[in-house]
Amino acid sequence: MKYRYFGVVGPVIFFTVASLLAAVLPGYSSKTQMISELGATGAEFSSVFNYLGFLPNGLFITAFAVFLYAALKNSKLNPLPAVLIAVHGIGMSLATWFSCDITCNPVSPSNSQVIHNAIAGIKFPALIVSMFIIGFQLTKSGISKRFGIYSIISGVLSLVLMGLFASSVESRSHTGELQRLFIGVAYVWLVLLSFNSSTLFSGKAQSEKVCT
Image (tube, rainbow, N blue to C red; front, top):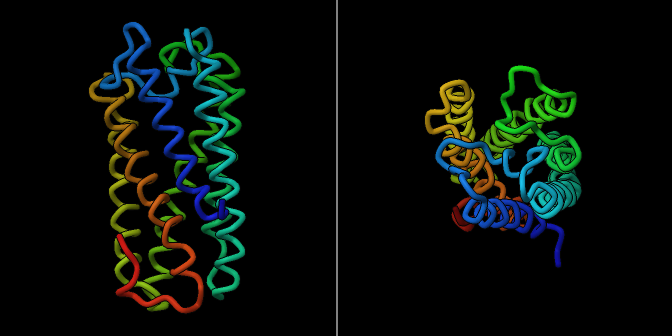
């Protein structure tokens, strides 16, 4: 398997495992509950989600970031987006061992919950910032204005949805849906970036030959 496909495998595994467990976990609501609650300390299938959801997703995304770093450098573009994607991947992996508490928003959070929140506060913004940087670089360089604009729009949409998600945590109004939407938008972008990375960063990219 080529490294570039690792950016596809990770997100697919993550959402597949999350969807399956959400369907079988008694009383769990994808509408109001966060994804991390599937792996919360004391949750029925916490180990399954943490080791089959968080961990492989993080490892695959980090592996893709290594490939992307080299590809960006070879294309004479700033490799910072690859570093930020790696930060996201490492953060996802670390969430395996730093689970949130039940509800993921307790009055008196455990140390694990505090660390989980801190990791989330870094890994998701890192991924979104990488979307903007890739977008501006592709647009400015002329490598692919279409994919560049798509990246910027995806970044804006993810950022707005993440803000709406954060503001809904206390009320739990559509919290789970908003979280899945903002992560979903970002991961669809990551999957498409993975599929197109060899074309985009080969030095021979043609703006009309990159699929979105």
